[in-house]
Image (cartoon, rainbow, N blue to C red; front, side, top):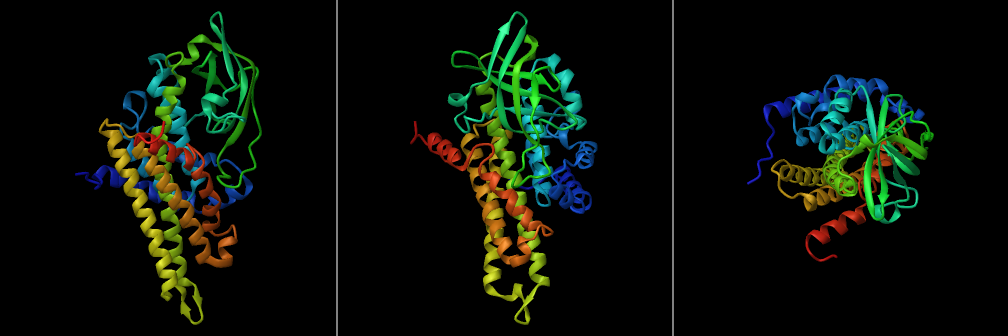
Length: 381
């Protein structure tokens, strides 16, 4: 039987993050979001709290926690804002985790302390303009070994945390031979490595997302991360873990929609009565809570299998699919409850609505999640 109760330490951490989200993030994030500015002060605040080091050992500067506790923090942040939450998620799951999972001891000692403190960030360069979900078939970026140097050419798109003032490097997947994908660490500022301007995005407007170009970029052969030719397999593992984290973030957004709606229906009146007294509104909020609760159970269960060292690919896909659906549905219903005010950016539900859609796309689209589930059930090749 799975026990979903939290330990005292987990409860204390969750409450601390909740307070940070409400007191530090909520009052200022709307301005960052509207201007499309990266919230360096909030990132620094998360760093001081140790959030970037949550699931890593103390020997590298981490907090010695686990991946589930990290997901709890993501959920609480996303109840208030997803831009801040995804910055943390990508900083940990796509920036530091590949180095921790697959790096040499020298690479870990060199990079992890600054990443786990939140002083620096790193990106994960996987997606390409012509590839999308077909990563192996669509990959065109190449890395050729020239003596003791990798020479990289190609481009990447939609890369989070890749162009901030505190970005240290991007880990890039590249073809290093025929049907051979490897991953290589490319420090920001390396000659030939160009970081594009910030995208104009529908949502996540206070997070950093950019296109990258590599024109005869030369880095030491020692910058190879993990085993040559195992790059794609390595990052499939990273993406499986990341789907649990994105599910947690999605649950936070879905629950934030419930939070905001509950406050609003007690204050807003129509036809002489608070709108919360109308059954149509009550049923809508009940459905929103049901979705958030169900999605939370799904990611808790997936995280439990991860921590137990059991196969979790199917459960991670189910959690991500269920939670992203909940986020999208809840943000639509919350916007409807708010009526015209839900269409105004000054209200959080409008921001939630804009942020929810990417959750059905990033870390594997909903269609990809269904493919994974079917394959794990043995009904898909």
